[in-house]
Length: 293
Ligand code: 3HC
Image (cartoon, rainbow, N blue to C red; front, top):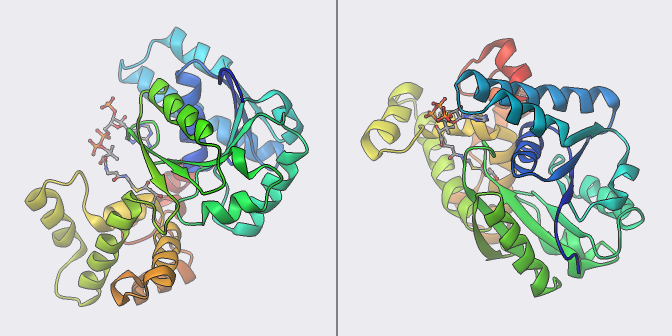
């Protein structure tokens, strides 16, 4: 088993991956941030730099701490750079074949004792782990969007994982300043099993045409005291992600309330995925889409 997790690899530098890179680097970890091409790695560097610069501009981060944080990150498109990593976490699109290909490649690159983690929000951790050579070192480490802000990390254990690995990842999350909860592998884990049916319900209410998107969101925000309304939150999370979790939950429960609403399916088909594409339930413009992709 790894004695200390000091070098971390993050694969996939979209919204979640870039946020996760920032979290690890701010906590003093050496980070290899990997995406498919040098251009995508550079784009990921742009996301992290922008987020750190925003913190400096707000007076929340010293310029020197910003420089040190960036100095701990190597942005790369070469998975071989992960040979020395103590832990690798993937945050690539939610497609089993992509995850399996990455974990299969990692099996041949990382040390035998390195921990492999997935940030999946909807796929079965057991299926991901079972396809690897060493399922005893595979866990879920599920961050919440925006990862630099939200404290929850779900640590997902499978029947195959070494319990010591789960403990170590839980301890790591605490070191990162997060609040971990350990969850067994089930559709939606815990937080999404609570959240996603609520978002689906809100989308169905909006579909009835009886309430505007703003009034619906305000009812949740002002009336129930949630930080943002469900349509705004769906746009933040990504409508494709909301739909994927609905699909997985419906598959497991067959409850109509867990099924993806028709409007959600249509928006996903239309490529209106929320903030990351500039349009979802609301319009965000091109710049927001570039920042969030
Ligand atoms: N990256 C880094 N920091 C960010 C950020 C981002 N993307 N977005 C906001 N922040 C920071 C701001 O800089 C600000 O920091 P400060 O307090 O140090 O100045 C702080 O967060 C608050 O931001 P704002 O003042 O701009 O706005 P709000 O007060 O409205 O907060 C929010 C924004 C944190 C996004 C808040 O509205 C919120 O918590 N919303 C709910 C988000 C949520 O529920 N996420 C979970 C989604 S489920 C999920 O991710 C799981 C997946 O599997 C589906």
